Each structure stands twice: as structure tokens, then as C-alpha cells.
Image (cartoon, rainbow, N blue to C red):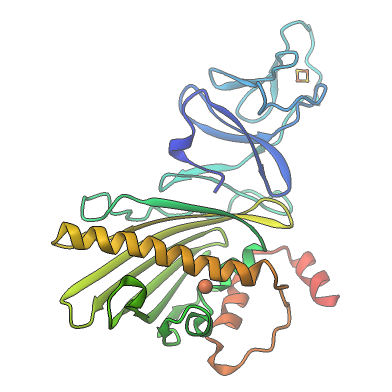
Length: 319
Ligand code: FES
Ligand SMILES: [Fe+2]
């Protein structure tokens, strides 16, 4: 995910940095979101700094060369012949669930799957999505594994979780479903007792996660529902951009909803901060020593391998 759809109006141009590259993000007059390599092949100006959308094209600020949606230069205002090599790389872009998504492939192969549409609960039964965002010194794999690591839910975050009850492992498929029963201690909500219920996580590739928790608060007759849409995108080989959008299900009492919402955001942020302290100081082990009770980390890694280049994976394992 390189931006939320709402962050990019028609005609808007923005410089962005992801995948260790300088890129330009823009939306054409007709509303198509586009991502190109940033540097103009003429004399190297950065299109994200002063570039302009002209209809369905983007114009470089330096000498006004224009590029169409495929990245090909189609206009040089003062030249009779356009140099044939004047072309920018256009990254495959998709827009789904209010997110602008970019396809990254080591060998620049075309997209082989899409993130499907999910129900974001825009029916009024849920509070509006609130965003929390972090730039974290870690790798995308460690952020993803966090959801699968059932032991750390207990040991680091003080949740009482079970190992997953179900995990749909479809090794050739980009979608993965994991179901836990999660018991969370409600002390941080200013209540005694526990909330217990299913925690359902769906992963779409390495970048996007959709986490739903539906719990009953013991003895209170209140049900707690939370949903989080998460996007993790590599900025370069050191940092990732983590953007989490969360909401809670409205209860029948407004003041209870408000209190739960406030506490949920606080707890949520504290939980991620605990993870960040680990992530920013750990190293990723390709050969960890896992025990039986570590949950499905090994199975998850087998699934996740499909998103890495075979050559790179073999090189890393041979080291
Ligand atoms: S550098 Fe872009 S048009 Fe000259
Ligand atoms: Fe965690």
C-alpha cells in the first residue's frame, strides 16, 4: 500500500519512497492512480517535485516532456523527434478497499493475484476507522509473523491465547486464513475479568492483513468487536511503513462505545509499541529453533516463501 485512496485527488502528484526506490504517485484527470519511477529519462528531474498532471499524462517540471499511462514519452514540446528510449517504468497499480496498492516483483513480472474487496463495515454499526502509523526499523516478514506467534501474545502482551484452532494453508494461494481463540485481560480497559472470543486473521500476500476479533466480556453482557486493516510496505531494506486502520463495533450504549473505543486505541498502541521494541532490536533468523507450542510460524513461513524470489531465498539460506 503506497497511499490511501482519499489521500490522492485527481490531478495530484506526490513523491513517495518505497521498495528502496524514488517514485512518483499521481492521479490522472479521469481518476486513474499511477506510480512511476521518479526520475525523468531526459535529464533526471524528479517528477514528484513539481510534475503536473495533464489529462491522462504526467508532465516533467524541467522541460515539460510528457509521459502516458504506460510510461512512454508522448510529447516533447520543442522537439521534432522523441528519443525512443524516453520511457519511465510504470508500476502495476490497483485500488481496493480504499487503498492504492502497488505490485512489487523482483523480476518485474506482471501481477498474478489481486487483493479482494473486503467488508469494511460502512453500515453505521462500526465506529469510523482510526489510523495509527509507524516507520519501523524491521522487515516485512517479522511484522507479519507477529500475528501467527501465539506464544508472544501471552509472554509479551499478556493476552491469554490458545494456539490457532484452524489455519487454511493454501500454499499456492496468496490468501491465508488463521483463526485463534483469544482471551484478553481487561485490566487495561479499567475492568476486571476477561474478553474471550475468536480472532480471525486473513492475510493477502505479505502486505495486507485483515484482523477481526469478536469477544464477549465476561459477566458484563457486552460484546466487543474490533477490526483492523493493516498494511505493511517496505520503504527500503531497513525500514517498513506500517499503517493500521481500526474500528470497534458500536454497543447499544454510546458512553460504553466511547469508553471501549478510547481504551481499545490506547491498548492497541501500547501492544504495537511492545512489538516495536522487539522488532527494532532483533534480527530475522532464517533458521529459528521452534518448539511445538510456537504455533504455526513454520507453516506460515512455508506459505510466505511464494512471495520471495527463489534465487534470493536460496542465497540467503546458503549463507
Ligand atoms: S528532465 Fe524531465 S523533461 Fe527534462
Ligand atoms: Fe505482537
